[in-house]
Image (cartoon, rainbow, N blue to C red; front, side, top):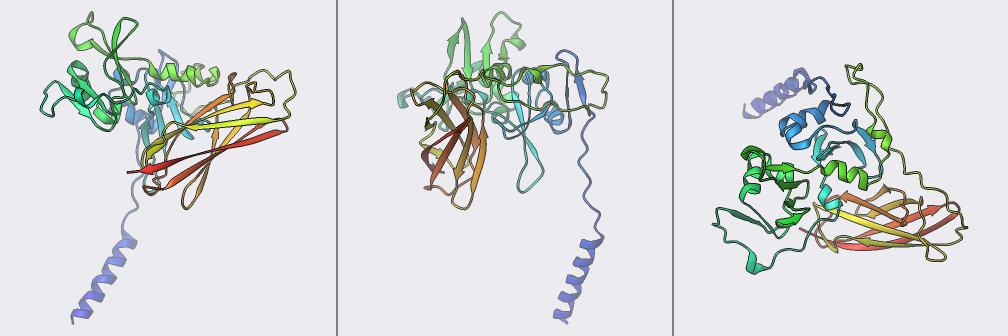
Length: 337
């Protein structure tokens, strides 16, 4: 009888699986148009935008969402103060992540000395061992009440003065202190999205305003184009590729940045070279397209690691091509927890 009850229960469960309704498709708010900059925000981007503070935290959109195969490697949208990346998940729906633009701009400072670490019970300052920096005072309050680590990431500098203003860099944002403003406006976020857009030399066409008449927001989505460098007025018969990595030891769940420098047979930089990066993990290789080299012959790419096992040496192999010339370089780093 016990076996019979088990069999009957199993049959009932199987039947329920077949008659269970299909999961409802995620519903997003209709696209919102921002006449201040002439762009829409749609679907997951808009849901995230509204959930984490809207214009106050991100500023206005300065592009439509587009597929950025050179930098983000996914759908992305630039805002005045941030960049959102729509990263497909292997085990679930796509989700929005904020790009660590301060990291991409190379703003991280070395950790503070152990003697400068505040005590754990200090009410005004908080220490983050993940990056070796502290967060305090008005910036700490703003951080805690406006999304914390999700929106800003870890602090990567201490307080500093830039152009007469007290600032602090976080992985995903830059805070500024404006004592001349009303109390609730004294902490403001810098236009980090605009700054990185210029730094990355993306196509200015992406900034072009979209007609508001496309009320559904379903107009054509602009695509990024490689920077159009003038052709070299010299023959390139041989190339040398130099590869370096930001982190010699990297967290298996973190990011890595690869920097590439390409020169010709005379050691002169080559602008406009096509660069491919292959990251060799234990069970797979991932090929990433890097931006074409700039006028200094350089190209940069930050990518998310595929969670390789700690203690594994990951090799990064780069191939650069210009006309008929081709060359490669290699670097490696160690993964850790």
